[in-house]
Image (cartoon, rainbow, N blue to C red; front, side, top):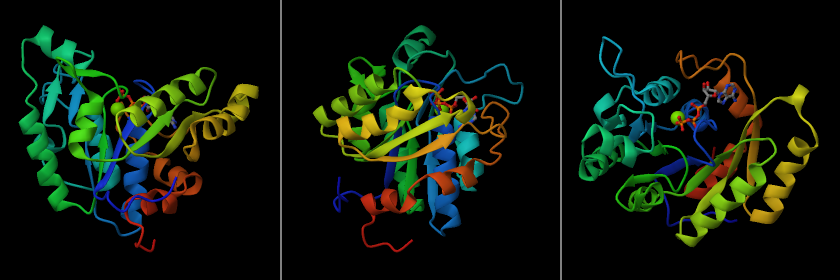
Length: 252
Ligand SMILES: Nc1ncnc2c1ncn2[C@@H]1O[C@H](COP(=O)(O)OP(=O)(O)OP(=O)(O)O)[C@@H](O)[C@H]1O
Ligand SMILES: [Mg+2]
């Protein structure tokens, strides 16, 4: 896959599933870009399962975690303009809660953040085909934002199927894919599946595996502890390749 000079402005971080590590990877990448002197912004446009029991008000954890790593102070209303209470697919959470997802508000927030930042990292909710409202899927939001995707995948058995399906669907929808990041490898527990999966995924998808991130004990999204994630991403991810995808002339 070569760079794509038509795209600029950032990446949409999607994944093969919920809980696969999109927030951790978004934060790690954001921290690395910041260290390279790039003005990076983050966004989690639609988030469900926001803890409304917190007496200080709802806290979209993913946004706060990535903002911490990126060192940004954008208003939470812009970073996470659409927060839903129930931990369900956005469409279902909104329907049960009796609210309408305001796409214009989401896109206005995105445009404002894009103006403020050189590179935006936007985290999806769940995977690429998650229903947002009616028949509008996460992929439709990606297309509206005109961003290439980075796919976050699990390291273990089953991930080849999930990753290839995500790649094929992105292709079918005309969404450019910058690469795949395999997240959460536990080296001491890794078996044959974990060792063979990255090569198999790269070969069968034709998409580069940008790196493999180990399971990092010091990282915890729930407690907003970024720990060693930036260092681990810096060591294990081909950042140059990532940036080359959207900024082929930038020397990093
Ligand atoms: N490399 C890692 N090392 C240690 N813990 C990790 C790692 N990646 C993810 N986790 C943990 O796994 C959980 C899920 O990760 P994360 O929140 O990043 O997933 P997600 O794909 O963003 O989920 P969602 O779909 O809810 O947004 C979190 O508790 C996080 O702290
Ligand atoms: Mg997340």
